[in-house]
Image 1: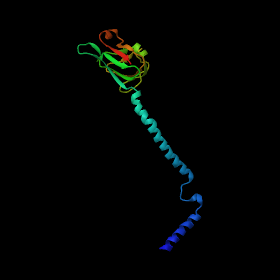
Image 2: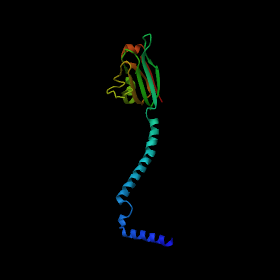
Image 3: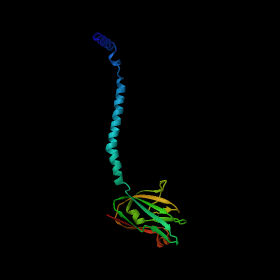
Image 4: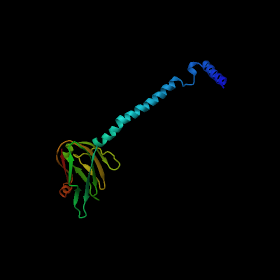
Length: 185
């Protein structure tokens, strides 16, 4: 057994001696660099996701539209126009998503709150559920709600105060289609 191992070893040594150093069983250096770069890129990507992605996702809950508000515009069974709830209490500096819904079967409402519009930072007005932006809509110009329409309004409160959200049609406002908005610290 001893001499066979020695013969095998010497045959392998002889084969290695005949193989040029750059042609051994390893991949060419360029492939090793690419493989190393790929592993490095994966590691860096994972590290960035852990350091930036996960905390940013967790922080997103605190810094974006943390409170959902809902205002229902309706005509009661006895024909009285109304907006519910009658009061909204907001905190200054917070982000909100306000959903306006017109349940009136035949009435179109244009909701306005000009002073409130000046006291907030508006970030978007979209139809719901398709989330199509509504160009030119604002609390100052009015937000048009056809029968059955839903609109999402994204904003941040910036100033304290008491404001009114009301229907552009004065008769509708006098009939009860208004909401008091109270913004406090």
